[in-house]
Structure formats: structure tokens, C-alpha cells
Length: 97
Image (cartoon, rainbow, N blue to C red; front, side, top):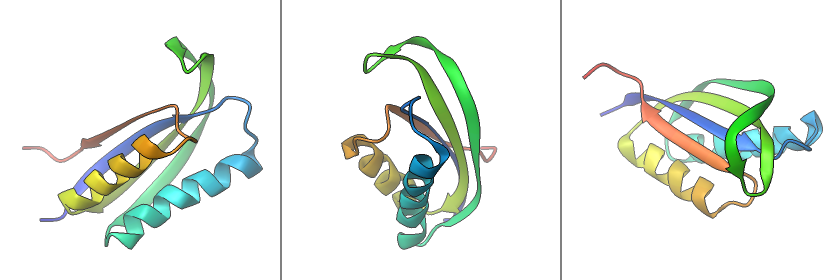
């Protein structure tokens, strides 16, 4: 069953736009490689974190909306957990239950 998801992840605050683009493309490729569809990717500006994460007080937020099977979200979650380029992430279903 195809469902809509939202993935919000935080990358290191010192990265430039040129360094963030390959990271977003990597996670987009994970979703598409599993049969999902990425609807949008929005990069937010640098923001203060509520608490220190991996020694950082700031981070750049990236919001990605996608649709896919639950296995797509599970694979994206697994990939983000083992990757070194994401400080924190959260993936949620956005449809009403």
C-alpha cells in the first residue's frame, strides 16, 4: 500500500549548498531505488537546535516529502542511521488514519 511520508533530517551547519546537494540526492536515490516517488525536497536555512547534537548547537534542516510502501521508509531510516552525513532524522507518515 503506497502511503505519503515526510522525512526531516539535520545536516552539519558548516556545509555549503554544493555539499548539501549530494546528500539530498543520495537520499532521493534511496527512495526512488526502492520504488518510491520523491515529491519535494526543501532545504531550510541554518537553525538553532533545542539541544546539542553531536557537538553542534546549530544545523541545516532538510524536509523531503515522498510516497511509497512502508519498506521504502524503513530502508531510508536504515540508510540515515548508518550514514555519517545526518546528525538527526525523523520519518513520519502524513496520511490520516
